[in-house]
Length: 107
Image (cartoon, rainbow, N blue to C red):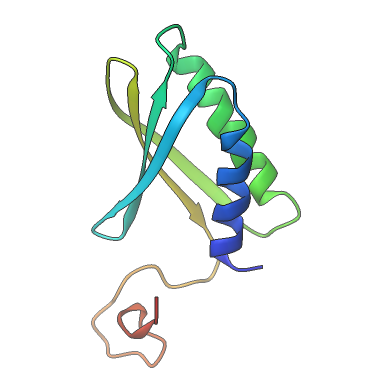
């Protein structure tokens, strides 16, 4: 399974959360950020639990892990840095002109 399918499963499960009204993923410098709009009565802990449950569902039966870091919130809008990590896959350019350099990947 590729990483795009894992993200798709993650977002499908995140969409079912009753606390999350809307979400959006943006990439800055190759790092994915989640922008989550929640209802006013939702706590950060409930958002964290929804992200955790969705990550567990997306990564089950796969050889991936994930890392989530809270960045900030503004009222009911929460921003997280969230990425799925595939073992033994290059994630940055080392500058050695490797044939499998991430600069040459097609998106």
